[in-house]
Length: 519
Image 1 (cartoon, one colour):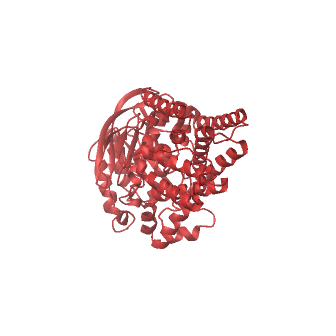
Image 2: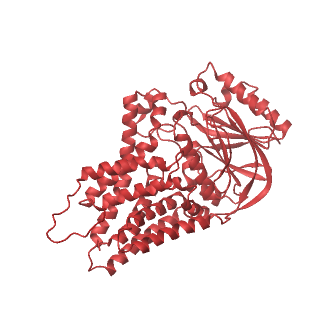
Image 3: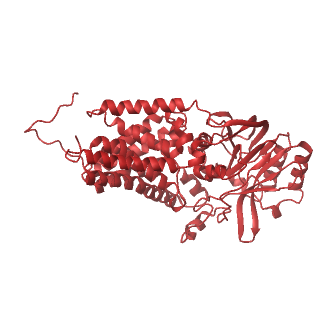
């Protein structure tokens, strides 16, 4: 069907209601789940963002546009975090209350997209922005800004940030420069350009889109970091221990012995267990447990990294890893998780009643320091992070930037059995891949149920175990040294670019002050 320009006397086209636009936006937001792993249809995400922008731009007022944005964010969050119901019900929360909790989370996360659309549309109305300025400058900038805010406000919840869908796509080439929020900004920019396909500026917009994609492909060939030291051998353990057994006293000893036997089965320069693979505090362990592992480390020349909770006082404990070097065989290295999960690892004020309903083990922890030293393994320096804190790329980059002798390898230890056989595992793997892209460093992952992987400095998975199977992943790799732009600048660069985009929109509006914004 050919579109024709309206003529005088034509009946006005019927306007879709705000409710109708909200439904379309919510469906578009939910469809974004297919742009992330395990599906990987990254162009769909750009189309979903284009649908959001289209519906918001045609809303009757900025307030109506905010409702459209909220609906999109609600659908986005609900589809991408529905698996949290598994964890909540496993911990004893009634199913209706668990579903209500996830819906409430999605409603809260939708506020960020709603504010982004409101700010963009309010400024467009105030400045009389032409459509190209709104699509290419204002909307992408506000999307990126509020994704960034979502990543730190109230401790942050950056799960399913838009940029993660593009690890293996052309836009992934920008990750070492702009990080995950910058990649998300570029995805929104591409969405805005697509909306101009029928506008008179279409060749400018589509040409710019093609240039952005081509540059992203070219950036993948840039080596931001360089190999350093000698390769080390690694063994990454995946216990596949059911949670029903892990925290059941009747199975505790069997689980501990199985991990000990698996560790001692074969030497390696680095042997790592998952998060809280050793689920007891040190004083609760059999007296010979850690000493026997220390003797193995000394005898075999292996460096051990063990996931274990540590207690510093009866009311102060942390989710930690300890390192046993072969020189002493003692747990002389310690890393404490510093970015804790709300409701799962720390209790927000006024919500103890809610966490008490879930009976989460180790549910009120003490955070570690933001900057912690890496673990020396021969010529490599290994920087751990624990599960959820893998989502906070700027914090990992800051540890590298502020250490005079920074890490050459990253290590994530996780316990994802809480989420069953859901998309949480492939999502978490995408997050690890983004951290490798941002820092130009390999990432090792040792998890209970998956993904136990080796990721190279370009974000490519080079070795992996099948999910939900016990096993040991063996590999040999070298670390990387040097700084990517993201390590040096963190998110400051994408925030500066968003500010420049808003300033550019204002200048564009000044030059077109006497023109209708839709022309």
